[in-house]
Image (spheres, rainbow, N blue to C red):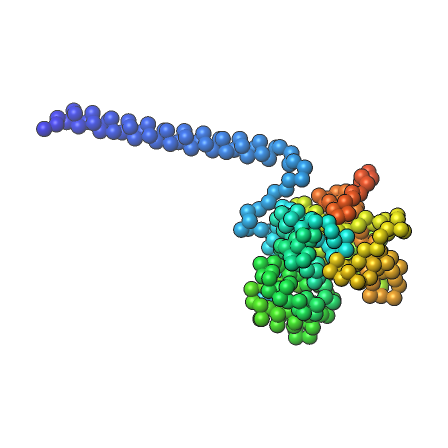
Length: 330
């Protein structure tokens, strides 16, 4: 039988062991916390490398206001480190950039421009986002097996006049989109709010000094797509877009179709010039818009391929502000 002294000695040893364990846990926790704090301090104080942006976890992308779902009116949640913005230009034909395009995290296309099939070698196969004008909706629906059924993982953003997008039963485009969504419920369909449309107009006026409504013109799908890409993407690689002075610099350039998938369609430069000079409405300021894109490429991580070109360096005291497009919208 153990004596009281032995019992007290055993209890003392046990308490001492517990005390040592507690001190060890406290010390270890404090040390780890100090290391984390030191690492956080070093990270916050270090300049961010050029071309690298903070990217939230893939399952928590940022909400982009102004693009609302047809189903539940929730904002678009999407973000990409690298984007391939594929135009519809005939300059893409024969370029063999398809695999390069498909390596981007997100591939952005416009209107009813097809991918894959006979076009895969030049324009790629994948589509992550497609921006569609109200005037192209019927062509998209006509090609739904190719553009919709095969791209149900893609996001579709439709833009148009506010009267076409009304949700009260009188919006022609909105009504058609609702029907389309009932037939293809897995599609991720969004429309641009009228407040956001006003912001696109204001951005154009700020960058060009021209009011597109007074000049009786429409912003092109290219304008919407490039501006949306600036909200979505850290880096944008644009395929098939010529420089602003391309058509005037070399009048003897070979004829290139306006759309790569319409080889017998109008010449691209003829289309650009006629629209730029148009004064009777229903036209776009393609060349003016390209001047703005060239300006943006001096500030943002935007690059042009097929044809390959780069804008001149940005003049002193010149900056571009796209942040206004991220204001609260519905």
